[in-house]
Length: 422
Image (cartoon, helix red, strand yellow):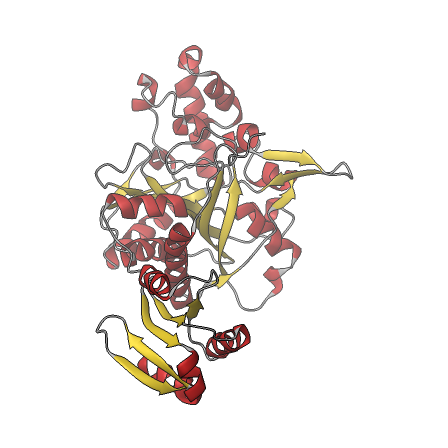
């Protein structure tokens, strides 16, 4: 019997989850400042949701989805990305009818992709993301990018690079699509099998290929920026102007197309340039997806968002030697001596916890010295010492572990005393 975790998954032990919780709480507080509200969607969806939104030609749909039939014969898929689920929820719950527009949403999701596991890329991954639905405005594009950059900077990251591009509107993309087909067709036999198919189905995906990244035809491929119509070019220019206005540096990369079919206009990635971070440098990526809500049966609704891998965020923090200020101390630890009744101990600990005081105790019948060692390992600020003599006098000794100072306190005054000290 194989009792190890499945390939591409990991256990998050308490020392790990403390870091995750700290990061998640910081992100939530930033979202609150930007007035983004949390949404939670099911872990699996009808398969067609991802086929229609992410795109049949993408690697996610073709190679990476965990898809199964339920007992009713319905095809279901563990969500491989977050935007499609949020878009489906937006349409199903008719959020487009809410007078408060746009809807600014954030989420923490576990995603599932069958791909080769490597550092920072697992088959079960954790993602933070935002989606703004209902606003076609360059300012929203920049707000979304600014939110992502603010998260990274607040956590201490400095070696960051924002790469941005415009994929234009439908008219611009159509012209660009034809130019790419014309450019790559003479080289089709030397492209990988995936790109040979992509050239017919979705030529923009050829630019996103990892296998053919160094192919000579990639270097002189047409630039999308040369095919933007006036409206698309003006939109992109305003996005860049607003980024400059708030001091966010950027690099324009005409080959940045992102891996999902639903993107148009603004597309961006945020990368780590920290030494030793690894070959895969992307921390977050996203862009605008006007038309996705219509594809799922809703009205004409513009949208933009991004996804941010939590695993990769933590790796970036490690690469920049950033220690998160996590308080691992315990408020109090109860040490008992002699024959103190269990019910007395239990009631005392319960009362302290009900008053918001963090406390733990010994459950293994250890001697006093071993109990004090346990208190030290748990970084207890105070040790409460209760023996038969103290109990008979209805008092307890409160010892401050850092200074060694000890004070006898009435049991009836313990809660108030600890609240004042803590």
